[in-house]
Every structure is written in C-alpha cells, then in structure tokens.
Image 1 (spheres, helix red, strand yellow):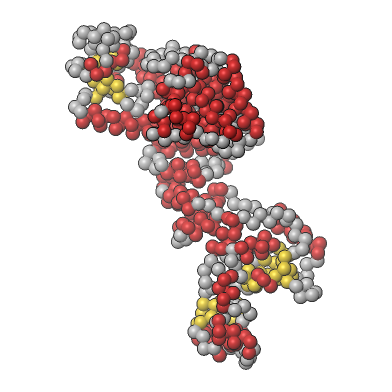
Image 2 (tube, helix red, strand yellow; image 1 turned 90 degrees about the horizontal axis):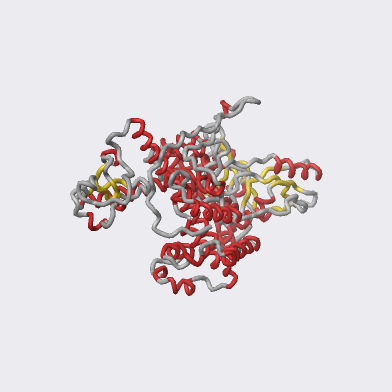
Length: 590
C-alpha cells in the first residue's frame, strides 16, 4: 500500500474517482462477506482512507454489486468511513505492470498532446495484460498507453486479460491492431468535437482531449451551430475543412454571396486549401473595399457632397483627374461636382464634373464613363460588362497582392531557411544587381518602395518613417543577410507590379507585364503558389475572372466509368473596357 503523501503526489486523475456511501454498498447482502480485513490494510485505511477503487457492477434495479474489493469494504466498515471510491470497469495499478520486452513500435511517439488527453480524459481503451509464469504482469497490447500514463499522472489503467496467447500471437496482434486502426478524418473529428460540446463538454476539455487549441473548438462549434454555416460545410462535404477555414467561414455568416463563393470553391473537384484560401482572399478584399467605400461615402454625405451612380451620369461627365489645369481641391467649388464610386478601386469615391464644357473646364481626352446619351441598350450593357470585368480583375489583383506580400514577408522573417532556399535568394539578388534589368537604380529609393520594404522587414510605424534607419532596425545576424538583401530587391519588384500588369485589353502595359511575369516566376521557384491572376500574367495569358473548376459531385451522383465530368464554364467574349487611370510611378523596364 502507498501512503497518503505518495498517493497525492502521483494520483492526478482527470476527475476524482466516483464514490458510493458505505451504507449503500453494505445494504446489499452480497457485498458484505464474513471476512476480516488484514491488520495492515485496516491500519492503512484508517490512516489514509480507501485509495484503491472498488470494482462494481450494477445489477437489476441499479443495485451496486462489488466484483472486486470485499476486503476494502470490510476495512471501510471497521474504520467507520462514510464513502469509498468505486469504478465500473476493472483497473490495475500502473506500477504493477511491466512493458512488453519486444514491443514492435520502435518510436512510441509519446507527445504532449497524447499525454494531455490521458490526463484530462483518462485512458478509455483497456490494455491487454498477461500473467507470466514468474508472476509478472506483462502488457501485450497498449504499451504506448502504459508509458504515457505515468507522465499523465495516472495511477491506474483499465485492463483485460490476454491469457492463452502464445508469443507468435502477441506479435501478430501488434500487427493487426496497428494495421487496421483508422484515424478519424478531419471532418469526422470536427463533428465529434461539436457533438461533445453540444452534449455539455466545456471547450477546454474538448480541446485537450482532441489535442487542439480552444479557438479551434470554438470555430467548430460556431460553424456547426449556425444553420447557414453548417449548410455551407455540408454542401462541400468532400472538402476537409481546416480549423482556419472554419474560423474564416464564420466571418461571412451574414454575407450570403461571399458564403456561396467560398462554398463553391470548397465544393470543386480536387478542391484544396489553396483554392479555398484564394476564395477567402477575394471575399475579404471585396469586404474591406466595401467597408472602406461605405466609410468614405459617410464622410462625403456628412460634408454635404452629392453622390451619384455611374449610370446616372451623362456622356459628358468626366472624372476630375481627366480635366486639364485644375486640381481636385480647386474643383471642389464647381457646381457640377459630384462623387462617384471609383469602380477600378472599389474602396473610395472620386470627384466628377457632370458637364466640363458647361463649366469651362479643358479636358485631357474624351469622356471615359457614362450611362446615358445616345448609346444603345446593347452598347450600355457592353460598357457595364466591361467595367465589371475590370472591377473583378482589379479585386483579384489586390487580393493576390495581399496574399503574395504576406508570403514574402513570412519568407523574409523566417529563421533557419533551408540552404537551397538561401542559395536561391542569393542567385536572385545577384541577377538583379549584375544584370541591371530589375529597375534597382530607378526605384530602390522611391517612397512606395520604402513603404513596401518597411512592411517586409516588420518595422513599426515609427521605425518606418526614416529609411536611413532601416539597417539599424533589421536583424543583425549575418546569416540573415541574404534575406535582407532579397527584401530590398523584392520591394523594388513589388513596387513595379502594378495593376496594369494583368490587363490585356486596350490598357495593356507590356513594360509592366513582362518584368512582373518574370518576378512571379522567381517567387514560384522559391515555393510560392501563384494565384490564378498571377498565373495568367506568368503564362502571358488573359485573365478570365469567370473561369471555374467543375464542382465535386455528391457521393450518390458519382459518374459511371467512362462518363466525363462537366466542363468549366465558358467565359463571355470580352467587351470594350474603360480606360484605366495612369499609374503615378514610372514603370521599370524588363
């Protein structure tokens, strides 16, 4: 018997043993035997109470029947204890067991997650034990649970006897139990976690049992508890939703269009995390632009400015930036000024003059926008479609930029890069400096480059104010020199990768597209997965925002052998697109 001090130091079960009163157990005649507890057992029980749980079963009428523990109950009665610990399944002390000397698993992989799950929930699967000729209790199956039990603070394990199994059979059992054991899929794990939480398990308990973060459990519960979000996950049941994607899905619970777009991406044939990441990036970009535009509109309305839709303007209307010899500030007093959503950017309104000729403004060119006048219905519709295509492309470009720059920043701030990656960074820097084709001289010190570089280096707003101090704020470890040098080159290339790079219509800019395509190929060689719009630039192909992969069929609708899946949607013919505002910065040469 162990004393109370040692027992309290070791015993750390997920919850105290359940107890029953001595009176309740003694009330059943079969539990009190005509036995006398040994003197040492009685003394230990009087000093420490009953430490080993009594193994009981419930008979008809829920009467507790002792299976093992008659002596301990007798001692409890003599010691006048009020209650004793019980268990409804046989358990054995861990220190009474011996591991199998030739366990097949060379690496037991006793990680912190496994140990924590045992500590929280206990061991649910019995170990199989065998009594050897010398009396040793050997663990034939469950050696990983046996070794992790002590680390988890468990003093007992559930067990079952494995008598009569020869040595050959023991090793065959090791093969079959490992070979046929199948882990839960991510979807099955998520559903099980939700079911546990729905049944009353606290988030912390579910997280520890599953070996995940509490915020992951919260994401699962939130999605599964919401009718619309759960429907989205169910619709794309072939996709293994990650915790990050479930949490992201919850961001759009009140946005049916965004929810549908993300669900569609997850429901496509061979859908992977990259496709869903891209759908999320697009929807986040749309949302952020919409929120920024709404905030800008509120400011304008508060200031008493007139807001108009593009379709309300006449063919004479022109944006102020297209007027000659007048600034936005100077035009503010013009009676013809109205504000229209900048569809090319989508996150702000821009000032227009409704009638430049009437208000005696010289112009830089022909009007680029308008919805009325002498246009036919077909021409007006074509113009709207063209503007929509440009808007979709610009949104995709901005989304790709945010994804790409985050990836670059993570690469530049990573520690202990593989040697092959470091060598690739050095090659890229050498190419940029020695070939003279990356626009380093023209653009290295320009303001947009400085802003991008500060972000890549992870500088705060105060540190980013003075370019001359960047080197002092950067990491001093000489092993990171290739990353820092590449950061400067990357900032130059990103500064030159403007929106015009994706355009293949009348606003195409080969002097931007060609070096941008080369830059994207460099990033791809470093392991970056190009987004669809970036891939179109790298391939020298027009970007088609309407292109979709076929959706995965439900299991019941799988095509028969020889039957092909549906093809991707065909894109509409390109209509004329509106002119884009000239870039303010000089483009770099190829």
